[in-house]
Length: 322
Image 1 (cartoon, rainbow, N blue to C red):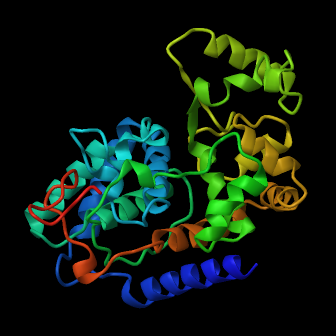
Image 2: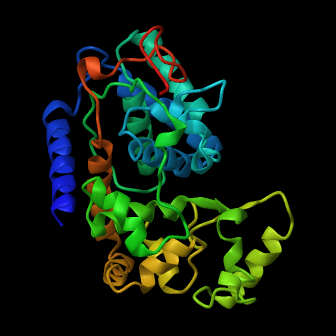
C-alpha cells in the first residue's frame, strides 16, 4: 500500500508540475500560426482518410504511456532498438502526417515548436473532426532525448480489468479515466491477430468466447479467414464517429478486444460503461478532461528535452537511444 501511495504521489506531482509550466497558447508570440498550420495538415488528411483520428489517438497514447509525452515514439532507428520497433507499436501509423505538420511549422518558425506538441495538437484536432469534444490543450513540451524499445510496456488486449488498470494507476489515472480513454476505441481498429483466439478456440476450449455475440464471432471468423491479418472496426456501429456508441456495443456483447468486453462485465467498470452508454454528453466531457490529463504525462521542459528539427531523429550530439 505504501508503494502504491508513493507512486501516485509522484505521478500527481509530475502532472502538477506540467500544469504549472504548460499553458494554452504557448506559441501565440513565438509562432502564432503553429496551431492553425497543424490543424490544416490534419484537416487535409482527414478529408482523404477518416481513420487518421484512430491512428493519432493510438500514437499519442503509446507515446505518453512510455517515458511520457515526449515524441520518443517518432524516432527512427536503423538498428531497430527504438520505441517504434516494439511489437505493440508495429501497427502505429500517422508518422508521415506529423512530418508534414512539422515541415509546415519549421518553415514558419524554425526551431520553435516541439514534435511532442505537434502530436498532442494533431490528436486534439482529429478528435474534433471525428465528432468528438473540442478542448483546449496546453503546450510547451520538449522532445525527449531517448527512445528505447526496452522501455515499452503497454496494456495488452487480453488482460483483465485489474491487470490493465495497473499502468494507468501508476501514471496517476483513475479507473473512470481508464474506461474513458479506452473509449477511443470508438474510432479504432484491430488486426485479427489481436482477437482471433476469441473466435473459435477461446482459452483452449475449442469454442468461441461465450461473452462475444455469436453472430459477430461468425462474421469475424470469415473476415479473419481471408488471410493477411486484416483489421476490423472496434465499434461495429458508428465506426468513424467519436461518440459513446462503443459502450453500447460492448454492453451488447459486441466488443472485439477481450479487454473491451471485460470493461462491460467487470463489477468495477460495468457501472461506468453503463453510464457512458446512456449519456453521450457525459462521455464527451470526461474524454476531453482525460485527454488533457494524458497530454501532461511525463512532460519535459527546458534542457531536459529539445526541439527536434526532424521529428524522426534526435538533434546532433544530443539524443541517445539507451
